[in-house]
Figure 1: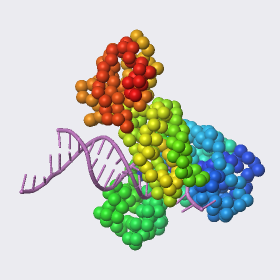
Figure 2: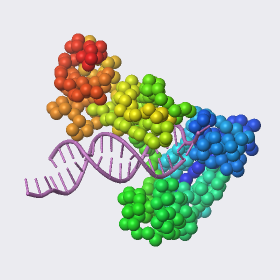
Figure 3: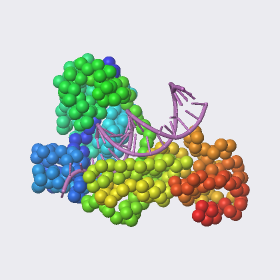
Figure 4: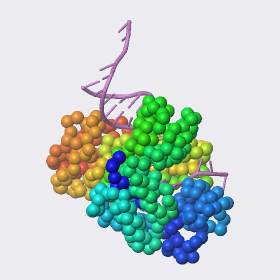
Length: 435
DNA sequence: TCTGGGGTCCTAGGACCC
DNA sequence: TCTGGGGTCCTAGGACCC
């Protein structure tokens, strides 16, 4: 926690719905609901007009329709949202290099990295007010709520206090008295499950939470969570504003209007999702070793299965093959409402395509070193990677390629070496070997 | 006919290594 | 005859966030 209120949190008001109202004048002043419009959709954003009827984010679209039948229900135009968001983030980055986007419509800005004469309350207040005006300009009239405080936690709480189109600065030193009367759910990380546990322990407000020892909190909600709860209850928050965050996983999932029972259809859907995951991995120059599937059954129980490959992949067909194999082990006879595929354990080097690189007579291309993972690599081999159909190529020194087939279905085969110009070393012949 | 999609982080147990 | 301890990796599930 800082001595000055130099952390800014900005939140675009009812963002998706506001973009729709901006672009379609006929929607202005009217209830607008953006979200899933199918039978199992939920509300992503409701305009303030729709909120008057009790429509809320995460509510099922069915219920939203019941509460506000005359609202405009829209499935959303994410390209437009992304474009508007980019303009806002660029504006923020022109203010301070330290901008941490939390989503399309929210970001932290570290004003300690901005060029301000000082960080006293009157100065940052005037600056934030000016910034809100500039947001309105670059977005074509969208409003933002802004909070300023001595930490991320306080800035975020502050931005909630005067919504929409408001600005709140929490004066340094007044944080704890601000928090004390609030419900524990104001603390990030306290959702329904944690709130219920605390409630059963007689803890409803931050003030009550403050009186609980750290050991007791750890007993109630676990080590990491208990520790952070203890700190945040006292407004102790030293989390820095972080501009760049590495992607940890990439996934695609879908909920279907009617439960799926046909395995062939499920496999086809998983395959299509896997191709989407591969495409996005390649677009971002990523590849990953762990392929996961997610299956939500008719009764909403959610299963996940994963497998870790010896080497990273960004190939849709490979991801799809592993995804289908993972599905094969699950009983889906009762029907499936959601299927998903993801890849995690991401490496930030770009997967080379050995098929595309190695032609007859070509030298083995220099490939980047794979991330080492102890115990994964055959001893004595130079480490590399390159995915090959259903198996893997392990490369060694220049001019020689070492191949070992190892798939989800078969135990590791023998290690075999080929000269780089060996005609056997073509995509097709290697595929035959695999068979 | 309740309950999205894309993420992050944590926990807990077992395998395995030293 | 009794039975380490720490560290890392992997898997499955759950809570949470926007």
